[in-house]
Image 1 (cartoon, rainbow, N blue to C red):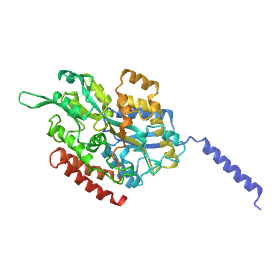
Image 2 (cartoon, rainbow, N blue to C red; image 1 turned 120 degrees about the vertical axis):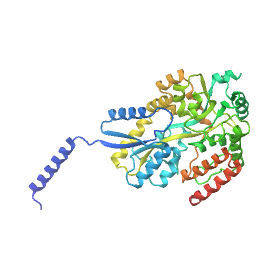
Image 3 (cartoon, one colour; image 1 turned 45 degrees about the vertical axis):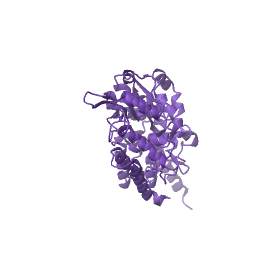
Image 4 (spheres, rainbow, N blue to C red; image 1 turned 180 degrees about the vertical axis):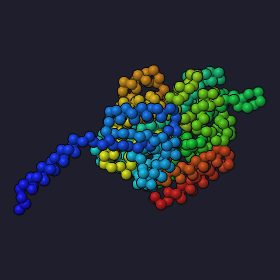
Length: 428
């Protein structure tokens, strides 16, 4: 039998050590937060401000935003960091990066983490969760989400003899109004295009607006099959090509994503299609009265959703994972989602965000954000598959070949489908 004094001495020493450790201040949890800064609107100051506010409310957590460039730059940097064992703790990446991040075993699902439950997941719009969940698990939390919407210059409509309050409601009206809105100088050079749809940066996303309106899906729900060359997909691309080549109301060739809002400001385009994430940018810079509307309908109205989700990374310690989840819940809370939407133009991601006093005041003064919210009932999940970067590159290459006249729409989409089939074969 051990001497009772020895046992008591050790117990007393252990309790003293525990008390001493308890008395020490807990070390702050440091989180690296990768964010794609190359998106519409002046977002860096907003992110810095929100991170600072979160730290003030949570002094035991330090957020280090890393502005990693475009979405494409950011996913490339994240995957490189994952392979090097230096993944971020939390990141905003495209919702369509979900399958890639799962296949790379880079991220963990939110399910099962303390404080992440079905009630929280169900608080977001179902249209946004379609690109956030797969296989019965939730891999992303909506943050800066969007749809494609139509902006029109009311002054140019009036000058063309059109009702400035009535944008085109369908494909036929887009063509007829576009012809009246397209202006040429004495030499026949176009000074204002009737309509401009960007085809660099995210060509597949803008193409998906046309396919959705033509009632055809581009992929299955499992991300293992694409339908690029279906007749309705080909007809959708033919319509886009015809806007410039046949009707001559749209710029020829490739239209730059980044300069499309600027062309709108400078009256080089009377109608543009771009993300709701450009709403605040356009509101701040357009020196004329403009309108925002749902996209014109083909067989039906519609747009894909788009934008970025929060992801949590596998390399996190339990302390980091808990802190990262706390940050994500704070950033996506109704109050912060409303603040983000007001500051950027992205769609507030939950019905509760639209019920906040701040959001109600904002839309009472400026109702345009309601367009994107209401378009969600006609929205579909953005194109997302396994090997998503390779699959979308195949489609983007085909789209640009068709828009430049290098291939017919039918041939371009057949070639893209053949390449997608090759890439995805092993996942089926």
